[in-house]
Image (cartoon, rainbow, N blue to C red):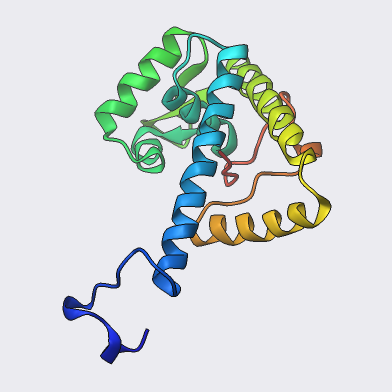
Length: 183
């Protein structure tokens, strides 16, 4: 919309036709899809591991993809306060899913890692999630699948989220490199 056609205050209405209406339509579609994806995530977590919350599982996923991570970095990645991250870590350690380790290069620094059990839990939940998402995608026509890949790739790139590794690279035994990041 040209600057001269903008309403007072420069705010473009969120409803109606034209670019502003399209943004609202896309936002509603994304919110609806996110509701579906959250339901898939919750079901796959509940089917595999009932003792974890979604935020705790997200922490496990971050640890599984980043490798040994400092608490402050983990809190930033999860966008929570360090005290909140510490409480989550304490619960994961008590459950045998995570561990604290001294950084051998800097003995004052503690890094958080997954245990083998934590790695297995992440692998099983992600495999279950992938199964359910694959079942939904199979119901789409091939041209819809291609459009969805294009749209979701653009959406995740705009949000700064790196892609999930190909299925061949995702196994419960895989030990991601420290620079990997997938959720």
